[in-house]
Image (cartoon, rainbow, N blue to C red):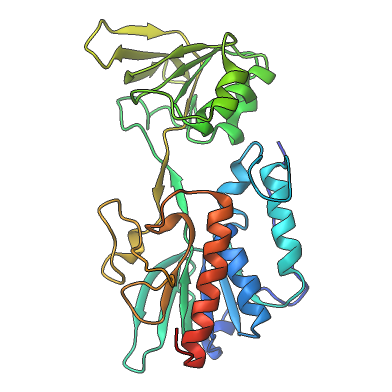
Length: 328
């Protein structure tokens, strides 16, 4: 599907093993999606010394079928938009710790921030931007974990081709679920979409493309996923109003029911809301001075690519003001 994507940065920018021990960065950006990449570009334009730490570069955008609401493009694929973002960053040189995540955050007595990564790097910075994004939300029903990777998928864009021409159920009622259904139709698969909420949340322009081409089941619960030990063979569902349970004969279960913030490592470091999102003010500041946050991991409403990118720009400018002691 061409979904694997690595940022082609200038040579010599990858953070070498042990190099970080001798470095004090102006800014550590945690996350490489639209928020993190935009923050990096703005911070680098301000001539800050920046390190970017992220498991990938592109974030959820890499898993997006197509984007029709990012200004300047009537339509662009997710990976291509990520490449456009990278073209902006390629103008500059930054230190990059790709393929890593931050597992521990702390602050020393001098006010410097220490970040420990999944490969045991110890990175020190004067300020931090949290842009860790979100990940797919699981159903948490019997059989889901057992058949994960054997018929159950949390990324329809990634795994859809494995189910070409096979019957699938897509769980969800938003844009990602309906987009996944359109993808599977293109692959010749019979599709049933099961909405576990009450009422469809997808944009009408997407719903109009789908009607009369798939089976739409609104307000249902998935109660179990079962199979033959090797692969999925069916899904049990019941109406939310308490009707009779029935089984759908499918070979794939593509779960698209929303996202969870990647904030587990932040508990106790910055304040989170009830949804475990990072609380920020209008200047992208968190509860800890010197730490800013941007994008889908934050409490900012409406999780959209264009909002995350704008959030990243705002956070970088706020970090620059903090470092230069410029009043808001």
